[in-house]
Image 1 (cartoon, one colour):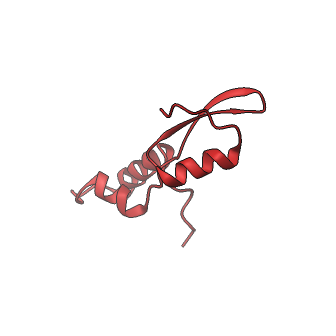
Image 2 (image 1 turned 45 degrees about the vertical axis):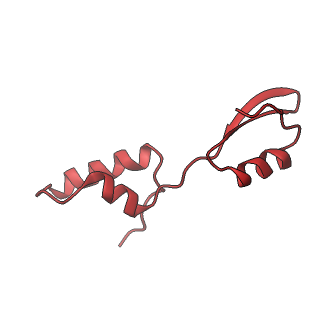
Length: 80
């Protein structure tokens, strides 16, 4: 963690833009906090993590995608 404690949300954002992998310590509203950037997870990342199709049923695929969404993936896909 950085040695300096950010005193504003603007300082936190500035530090995270400089180094998105960092964890930033801050004091905001009198509360000590630690802030990090949440990595974005794309559909391609999810499919890469799931791996090649191995004959899963539609229900099994839905379960795998739901698990990925709960662990930080994007929201509900649009209805077709």
